[in-house]
Image 1 (spheres, one colour):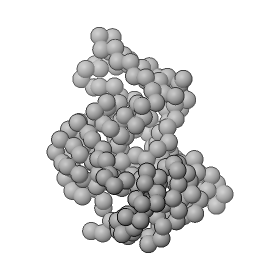
Image 2: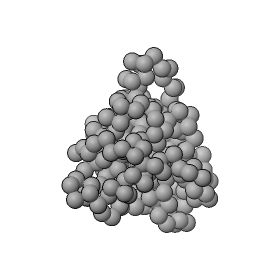
Image 3: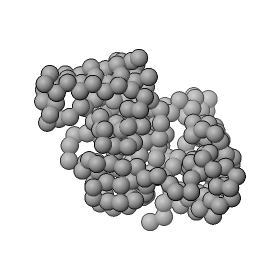
Image 4: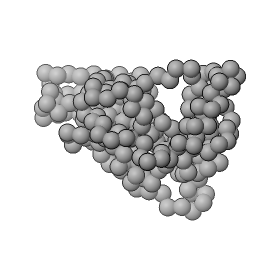
Length: 144
Length: 85
């Protein structure tokens, strides 16, 4: 089971943040190769592991940088809004140094306030183990 | 502003009663006003969508009577304007 363990300077303040790479889906990459279309560079951002998020969300700038079009729409509810419809983009999220890869629909939303560009939600965590060692400022994420 | 998937969403809503009757719980692939097919998994529907349309907008949707809402307890998501723009 691939795992990543991260030491944070202040885990309580920052939260469990990982550097992740977003890429176009495997299927689209294959199609681009066949059609001689240049494959966009991965977008590297910081994402927060959020057990309060039922699904992964990303800033809409990420699919824009990858030149992607939406493949779905879903309703989201947040503390400040109810049943708000947002686009979904099918992409890969990778932590290359640790062989962690997930491919799923990511919801594009505005994300304000911190230097993070994505939330890793329970649709990813359902296939993993999250160990949060607060007193050591350390966390581990393992995914099937 | 009209959303990129407004035609597909309209097509889904128009055909929802029939889809619910025949394929409840499965995944439908829609391009503009056409229902391409129904699949057992989300991945299969997206794969066919990419194969047929490449990087053009299309809609993959789970056929359900009541669509579940994705919930976020964090205040990091601030909805200021419509997302479907």
